[in-house]
Length: 77
Image 1: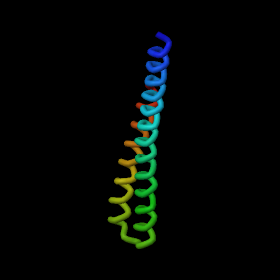
Image 2 (image 1 turned 60 degrees about the horizontal axis):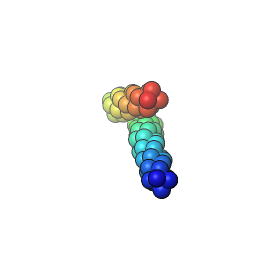
Image 3 (image 1 turned 90 degrees about the vertical axis):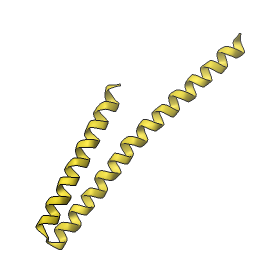
Image 4 (image 1 turned 120 degrees about the vertical axis):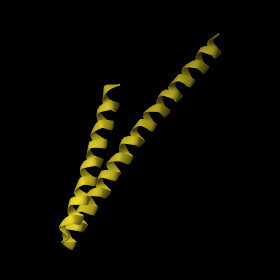
């Protein structure tokens, strides 16, 4: 009976650790996307084309919103 309990305990611990890592990677991916979009905005500003800046800024705002929603959902659980 002890062996069965140990196996179940270790399985649960492994499952919990794996789930936590998966959730972190999603937020990290969204954070990286926000960083990439921010770099695109900076590049567009340096080029001086205002229509490109507006488009890139809209994409950045969208990426930031996605990140905030994912972060909010992950902290509520």
